[in-house]
Length: 473
Image (tube, rainbow, N blue to C red):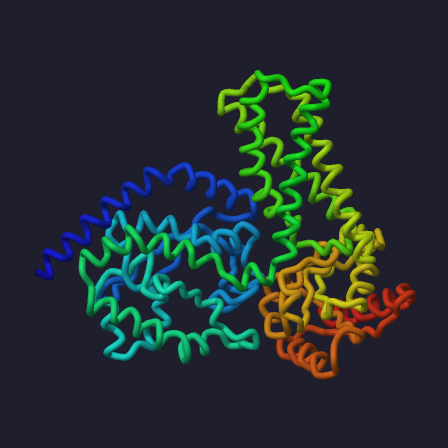
């Protein structure tokens, strides 16, 4: 009976695996192209895992981190992990990075459903009873995922030693759910999950907390979608002397569909909704130019392959100019309403730095670093104690996280100095930042609120950088 169940499970794996590879092959090629274009490195990531009976095998995923990530941080991915690439964030959120494991299923190392394969390092901490999860093949989708669980959400924001927290607090519950699956396994249960549970897994990614934290960005994206639709319609009206011809309606409808599908993800990719509107700068304008240009190219290609090869190229050119104009003006208007405003412009910095704080003091520090065309200092990230600011951009520089994220950020970006804004942080927060700097051996400089005395601040930074260089020499 047990052998028959194994044969049935393997038959289901092969059927759905081959079906998935056939249907998803275009998507796999598109994802591979995005991964390759996003950052330097291979498309796939291989890592050793423990399979059935504890036998090691190599698991395949789309690469979502910078090259050498595991040499510069923990084995586990944590919240706001600075090693994750832009495309990697999207792939991890949607779970698309797991799709290459269909090849692991095909060769028999994995099953579609089963306990998630574990790093052999953590398998060493299993008890005799817990090693029962190794009696079956690991799966692409595990019991914890069936329950809608995401381990990165279960780490407290103050967690420093992620590996110890995982072993002590998360691993026991995960293994308990896996053991329950192993004891109650049935082919019918796996088949039922594949037919129904996939939708449950997809819906679990629509986290209420995500929408609550990003409400303003979502509204902004919807506003941009309305603007790009209006821009295309207006471009057609301009080209046709304000009268839309009946024969043009089919390709207008199809092109509007492609605009709705293609422009939003391209805008997200180029960070149009991660930037602080109050500090709209030349770098933000450059991001708009890139996003609109790439989006227009994709829409032209989509129209061409949809059979509308006679679509007026002049309309696309007018549309491009209108979209750039409307997105730029909308951001300047929002900036005016929020009483913000800043400029930007650094070239060729040589020393990587982190800025601690995200208020007016940090804003002044960033402006001092970025506005000087002779600046040699590159802000690689911002450290702030307010969780609501994490993931946002100020002058195009990302707010990475809190003091507990400094070590990983500093290692990933080869940071040489931390600039601490006393104007934005309480004494306790300053102490946490400075102690974190001492722990990882990176010098820091405490900078007061200098408002208009930016030249004095630049002098202080120069002194600190000089000290770092002398120490390295």
